[in-house]
Image 1 (cartoon, rainbow, N blue to C red):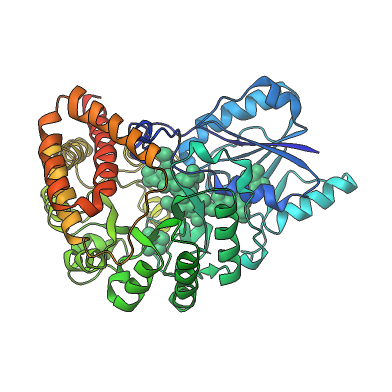
Image 2: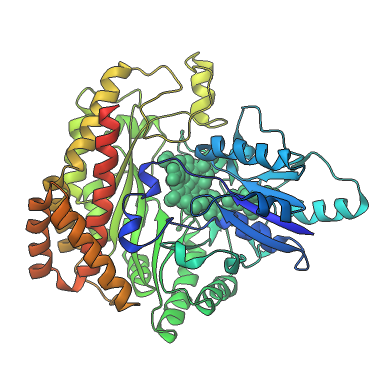
Length: 495
Ligand code: B12
Ligand code: SF4
């Protein structure tokens, strides 16, 4: 059996990093871990190929080679998914779909032969058996959420590693909190399930054996969802990193209460974590209360500072459009982002995702506009009636993005963040001096010579060289990503 695994294309969003990736000569930020896991769940005797439309085109010859086409998708990939299904069907292929979009959408799905809803650790082996008996079903619905002991090491080798900026591994699924707008807890549950330490180390071994060096994103919904297990995992990760010469810089997602546990933070730093993405959402207490985000309590600027003190850069998500947002929400968000020195602030407009508590409340209140969200909360659309005038919200949102990614403001934040995270206990390695020098040359050419904001770049560059030489690679990475955010903010504001 020949299986073609297809990852549909992402639109250009803040998350695509499309304007930053060329600096390091990469095509895409992360590989599609869902599909690589699906591949490992299929019989080893089956042949598999991966086509990631974010780095390559889907060729007729790929489709002709395959017996079946397996595709995944997040909501934001749905247009590209439809196109993939159409092409595969036109060439008479059996099409199998899975992933978060098909699991949670209320829209009519593309015309596939089989749809997998939920996690596939139990349903895929069942499908393989059904196929052998000639008794397959159109829909495979996971009856329950599988233990992650069942999750095999992903088939990382299928991906063209050189094209990606980071690799992904997953330690846990699910989150114990109950934020109103969140679909994670609906899709992956509120009881975080984790892999064993041995499983994690085996995945690290696999990536290292394939020659991967650099960033590894632990793509958990909330890395500290199961703190007890994480505390046991970190010393093993730290030992592995030390024994292997720290080949990986780790990045993950966590709830803000990470700041309450300094011992855990110290262990994370020791294990090689140098970045964490937090769900801060808003500095407005009433809006946090409305979103049932009770874990974001106390002085949030101070929480961010605590994490930064451990040498970990903080990235964070912010939302505007809550019912309780006051008219000065935009200024308050800007002020918070400035004071907390978060270079990469992903600000989005609130949208209701299907099946969330927010969706149900808005439905009860008759405020839904009858559409699935686009999944991209940075385009200026709403799928529900907002309390604040939507035109005001959009203008205010654009003002936030224009302000925080204005070059002077952004570079100041980066320098501030570098100052606060200076306390590194683990030195990042230079994995490839040639790649590093090429990236430097590209950045100097584009941001230091071609770009009209070059004056601000040089002002930043000089400061970074004088004061943060040890964090030089981070400074360059942040300059490149800042350029991406500025380009997109400018493009969105013109629309
Ligand atoms: C890493 C990650 C990213 C990475 C991208 C990773 C990538 N290249 O795929 C980044 C940071 C770029 C990202 C961005 C975004 N993301 Co994201 N992301 C995740 C995260 C945390 C992990 C994904 C992952 O690797 N999971 C591990 C694999 C093993 O799990 P899985 O994909 O679910 O696969 C299992 C099953 O679903 C199934 N399966 C999956 N595919 C298929 C296919 C077939 C054929 C079959 C049979 C089975 C199957 O089998 C697997 C094993 O059980 C998930 C949350 C999560 N827990 O998955 C959110 C998640 C997928 N992201 C989400 C969102 C909304 C976004 C953004 C739109 C954020 C935003 N608001 O702007 C952006 C969009 C990207 C863009 N460029 O525009 C949502 C999707 C919601 C939805 N209904 O579609 C999720 C669920 C989390 C959330 N609520 O925020 N994301
Ligand atoms: S902390 Fe994050 S993952 Fe957990 S419920 Fe809230 S938004 Fe969802």
